[in-house]
Length: 168
Image 1: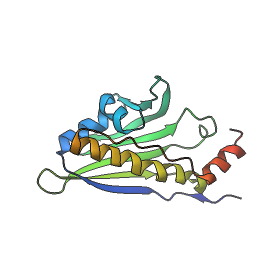
Image 2: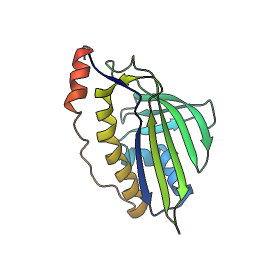
Image 3: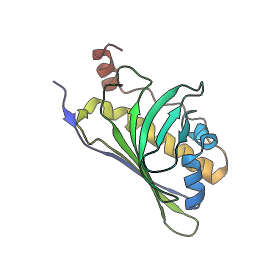
Image 4: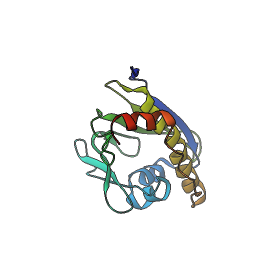
């Protein structure tokens, strides 16, 4: 039997930018598609509002609800993958972006993915391989105006095994 976990995933990155520019990049569809594997964020920018990411074709990929909204410091929302049937039964995760000043024109961005309800630990590899590429793309975009072409990492074998068990 697979082990269940509530272990969070956390990444901290320092970016030579202002809190306002980072906030705009995190909440703008035009920016998000440049560093987030083509996904475009959309939201009703208030506590309780809907938030999600759409594929380049316009299909829903992530769906959620905004839990905390404090521009340009904190965005916290539920996160559910809706585009992959093998994952659609999972409980919501919670993703937070915390932006803090960390020097002159430097911010510290903390991304936290929480799992309030236990999930199969094999699923954590997907986010742990994807978040570094996403955050690195964001950093490059904000610091240089361009994003490197990052090949998305393949899904980890453990996650593929899980999805196969789910009939995907």
